[in-house]
Length: 157
Image (cartoon, helix red, strand yellow):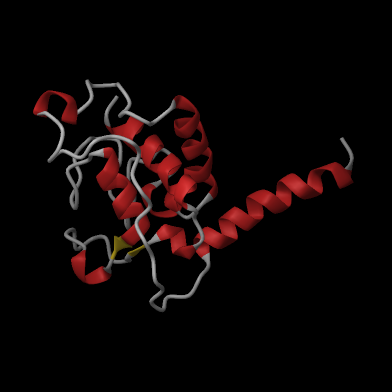
């Protein structure tokens, strides 16, 4: 492998990492990406609202989980939640299935990644830093859905 053949992959990973870590702290208009084709809890029968333990929600694929794993580890997620997603000083454990700000549905995970958690909404005082929406402003809707798929799998296995 030549030095020239490594340039594009290295630049791609660096761009994702910088985008997730960078961005301004000022307010930016964000929109919540449309969730998967999964029906909302309000419109779906209770029996189908929550997939069986270990099953993925409708519209979520194993390819999304795999991509989400890569994005989670290449972006700012890993800084606060840790490489094993078991939490660190500034971010909670994402593997336990117990969430502070949401119930843990796929759609809620998509929403919290999209919008973040402002400092004044953080429920655990040991987590001092806000979670910036869209990884600091650069994650696309599809990337957010993939990271949400990965977090969903971690927390529902």
